[in-house]
Amino acid sequence: MDPILEMLIALESLDAELEDFESEEYRNSINITQSASDEVFSQQIDKLKELREEVVRSLPIAIYKRYQRLREKYKRGVAPVVNGICANCFMEFPSALVSRPVKNKSLETCPNCGIYVYWTK
Image (cartoon, rainbow, N blue to C red; front, top):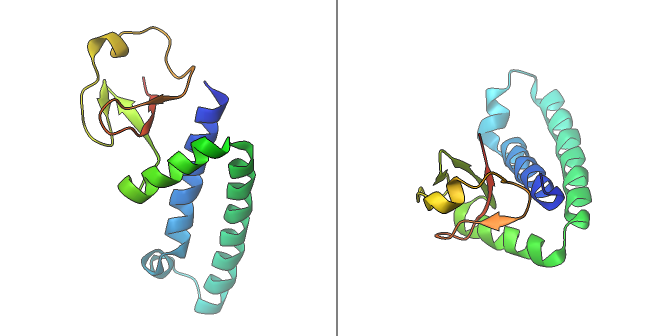
């Protein structure tokens, strides 16, 4: 798999976890005391932010800026292609792209919505 694509997928995962940990609803769904909850969540958020910064530093600036614009527009920057369909806009990819034997070896975008995509089996 393309290393930049791997980093984008990791960044997407970290961003989703950060959103969860910063969400009041998520905090309330965990059954621990409030004081323990605040400390645990604060530590976890700090750790996730550190990991996120490491990933961001390793990405080319132009790719990171585009990822951020995609997150602002779609609430995600990367989406899987499942059975030839973009999981962001649900457009079916052309059969020439779907039938290619080599996938995830380079950074690709959806021809419809422009989101970074990765292929699932």
